[in-house]
Length: 110
Picture 1 (cartoon, one colour):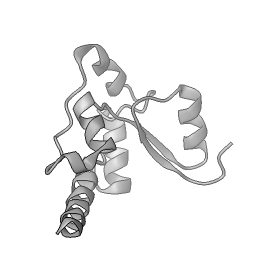
Picture 2 (spheres, one colour; picture 1 turned 90 degrees about the vertical axis):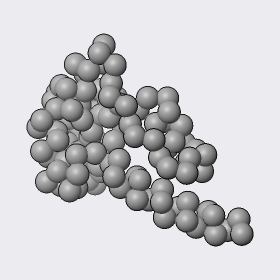
Picture 3 (cartoon, one colour; picture 1 turned 30 degrees about the horizontal axis):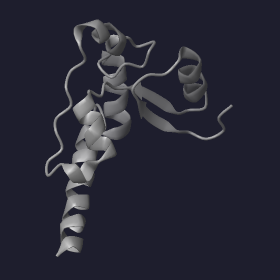
């Protein structure tokens, strides 16, 4: 049981987990991460510029369009995220954070 609001962006979540987090006032967004996007999250220093996330494969598209699965391509989830966070997903915020990080990283190497 969750007692605090948490906001998660994950690749997949069970219906029970989504309901439990949303019942406590939090949010879950299931986003697709292809291998390149996942590598960029794990090892951001390997990239001067973060690659843009790919769209889900056709076999996974239905999952990410499904509101019940908290799919990031669902219009309801996109509207909710836009109202709460000012963007549909975290990609823009990650890019800005990466730019700040890389600036500090390059300065430390000099």
